[in-house]
Image (cartoon, rainbow, N blue to C red):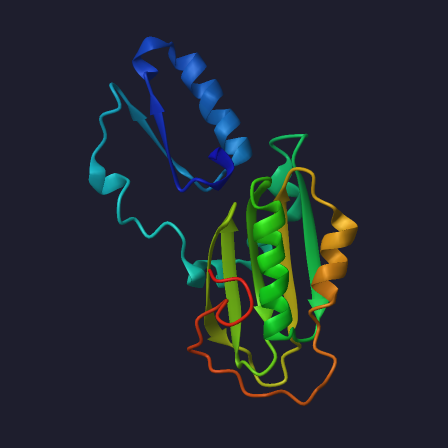
Length: 198
């Protein structure tokens, strides 16, 4: 949870010395350098500091792709957790991608701590950005691909008992085999139809 938090509350900091608090803060920074830390007593906190804070920003994600997809950093905090990074050159068929994500959510959801990605959907002029925690999934089309820009899809799955070979093979199976693409409605509801419904 610490790894994925936007805000972290450090409660009962009045019961330990500053050295102990600083040690805890340093450990948290090792796990999640982006989260804001707030020290509290009796769990009292200004709600304005933890609600409606716009923690996840798609624009920010797209502006810092390198950090978003830092595969190694994502699992350094726990040796029992692994991450599987997938990079695919080319566009993905929407129906196949839906099925792939659906399978991940259904079969790996409990052990799948976090998933995220920026993908190129065949027939769509915009990047599709998604993220998920366990079986809770969200995503939407964002910025347009530039003219002549190579379309590359990048995804990362973080969790326990992940079969890297199976995940990569299933993801690669989503690649569009034909260059003749049907135009995809960019206002579509992701997961509609026979695939996974987010």
